Length: 102
Image 1 (cartoon, helix red, strand yellow):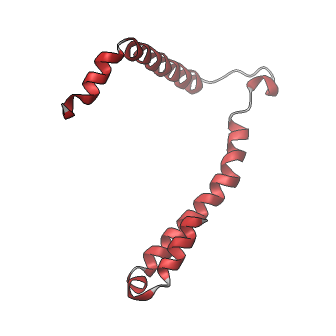
Image 2 (tube, one colour):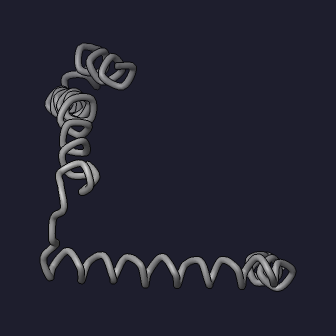
């Protein structure tokens, strides 16, 4: 709401407001629609898509689901492996991170 208020005020103020009125109105509408979607549609879609399969009965999943699930598992395992390495070599990681400024 604060962003909408800022852009709305910006659209009605002085000579700069006249120059950027369309831009301010467009951003205000986009922010309002985004807020509406994120507060209403997104939770509803999550409740539909992320419900547990056990609640629906004993379902079989298709090939696309199994492939995407396996891909996500590989990505998650790779991230965990990399994170364990970084946390095990924290001095080297800190040196590499700060080396451009040394």
